[in-house]
Image (cartoon, rainbow, N blue to C red; front, side, top):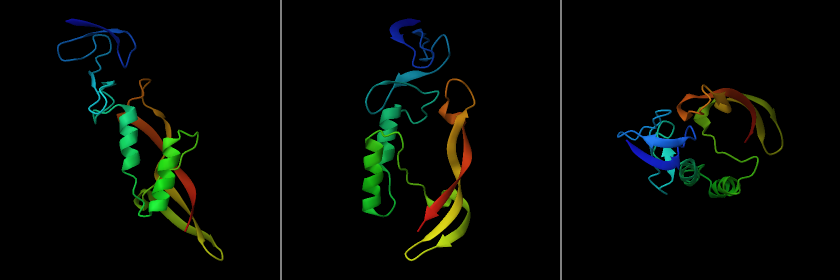
Length: 141
């Protein structure tokens, strides 16, 4: 067993790794991000990227079909504001109903199936067991 003076990404204890790179205290698999070489816990990061690199990759993949909208979303994502814009594909909405119309637009209500983050199934914030609750929104076209 090899002793590494770093702390485990998951449990925070000074870690000793088993030959298969599992922490001896919490059994989380420790490795490095494929992009920036930061320590990551593969128990939670199935894509082998740290949260920062994963978020950066997601920003680059925004595609609403309108360049101005994409640029606005990317700008709010990059500024780390308290509230950020997010592109939600139309396929993630159900129960779409028109609730009004005006001189230049129509207003709808819909339920976003992926919704908002409600919590995690365990205290370790395991990304594979995220609990989300559907969210009803007003949409404008």
